[in-house]
Amino acid sequence: MRKLIAVGSMWWILILVAPAHAQQVDLSFGGGALSASNNTNTFSGANESLGGGTYVGFGGDALIKKHLGFQAEVFWRTSQGLYQSQVPFRPVFYDFNAIYVKQFSKRVAVEVLGGIGAESLRFYQGAYNCDAYGNCSNYVSSNHFMGDFGGGIKLYAWKNLFVRPEARLYLIKDNVEFNSNLAVRYGASVGYTFGGSR
Image (cartoon, rainbow, N blue to C red):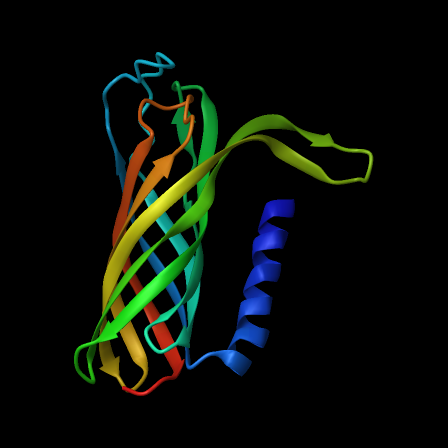
C-alpha cells in the first residue's frame, strides 16, 4: 500500500508542478494483456509463466523541451492469478521513463520511451499482517528492479482526446518466481493532451 501511496504522490506532483514548466502534458488510462515465455528458467528452476490476464493502469507524460520529456505509469493485473495453482497473486508494474514524441500531423504522433521501474509481485494470504505502525495488509510482496522500453502511436480522435495503441518490453532483474525475466505488455490507452502545438 505504501508503494501505491508513493506512486500516487508522484502523480500529483506531475499533475500540479509539471504543467508550470512543460510545453505539453498528457494523461491517460488504458488496458491490455501481458505475455511472457512458458519455458523453464534455468537459473531458478521456475516453470510458472507471468503471462496472462487483463491489465489496466494510468500514466502521464510532460514534454519539457520540444519533443523530449519524462513519463510515468503504473499497470496492474485486474484479477488474481494462481501461483503454482495454490497461492493467489497479482503483479504490479510501475516505471519512470524518458520520452521522445514526434508529431507527424495534426492527428498522428509517435512516442518512443525507455527507463527504469519495478515489478511488485503480491502474494495474497488468508490473514492480515500488521506492523508496529498499524499498517495492515493481506499480502507479501516480492519486488524486482526492471528496465522498460516501448512506444505507441497517438491517434487524435477529437480535439485533444487521443487513442494510443502501445507496447512495453519489461526486462525484470532476478524474476526468480517466474520462468522468464522478459515480459511484453500490449494494449491501448485513451487520454487527453493539455497544451502543446498540434
